[in-house]
Image (cartoon, rainbow over all chains, first blue to last red; front, side):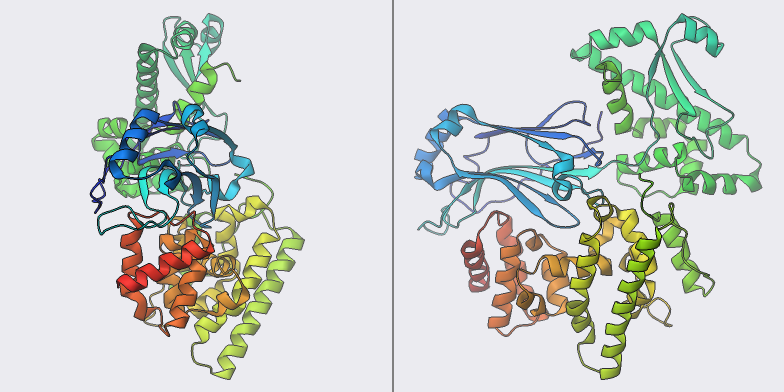
Length: 329
Length: 228
């Protein structure tokens, strides 16, 4: 589950016919990092920025469009569909589609797929992310009164997706454990979830030093049910269980420190190249738009671990789950 | 994450800048991967060139030297960065490494070592979410967003920072050009077009400017100025 903050602010639009075009466009954007595509307007989501595939699906409600064109007194030729993306640091805009709304577009819609690696400045901005916009716009200036649509570029319906980089987290890749693996791990056969690591999670977990194991039977049931609502709910519950285990492990390690060594451990844990602690901290801050520092976060962990568990929803874990469940290993 | 070019984490950079403020820093922050000899040489050449521009400006005692610096330096920074790989260009850690290497240059423009000066660490490249404040990014953008060399020389820093780089205007190079030309033709500085810039912002709530061509961009800027 992504931590999404959808900014559904309604712009006050000074037009007689403001809003009548709402819903003419239906837009779905999917990123290969995300659990599922997103629909609707004005969302903010996260993704990893090194690679991936983005797909954009646009369909127009022809019936609705015909009616609204008549109501607002515009010919269809006055409208164009624009699809573009801008990376936030280099501010480069790539216009992927800019064409008059044709009969073909109305019947077939628009479907585009982009490889992130081929558009690094638009989709690969790991500073601050990018904005992807699909808009129905007036393609030419028109005569009109004060409250009419008249300036070129005026949008009639618009969907924006702001995508920001997810934190550099630890790779938490749940793997299925069958009875043989359970024996090797030295745990009981009825075990559902097991964190395997050597010694401690703080200050640093090297790649491969932390393994998240899930009962194989449960794992395969999740796979079978992965597209159902129940399956998705079960995935979320698993994610919760994994995060809980990790948080409680981190808490017990913090508790085990002598007071004068605690501060050092916190600093080291935060600064480590690959850090469970920092992963949790970054996700915690994103989840609530706070900017808690490492020491304060450690205190929160110690006094209220449940709060952390509630707020931490790391993208990486679900992407890894999805990858595992879809059989791409 | 990469293992081919140097990067510096924001935390390391921040710590080092604090040491500099206290007069306690020695050397530069250590990058995760050492720079290749070739990279070190080209960074060193860039540093030398930039410092030479600075020294010329300082000794000629010209007014508006910061703006002149930006005009002269922006192409150098852009050519340097674009000459590297796309991975470097899109990696905040690499830009931070550059920021550390070119500390003297940035410090001339945004001093943290002169008493009483309050430059922000973002000016040096220690905060990737505030990239619009980072001098090297601003230099890069000034070159990149200028349609022609003539455009690059138009506008003062205030115009570039407040009305182009830190706002959505920058997302269409034609709009940037139209704004620079309009300000020049109206004889107005960055500070003098604050109201026009506000109008542009208000118009952008309803008008998509990213897909405008040259003429449409001109019409848009004219509209904003007329309405103000």
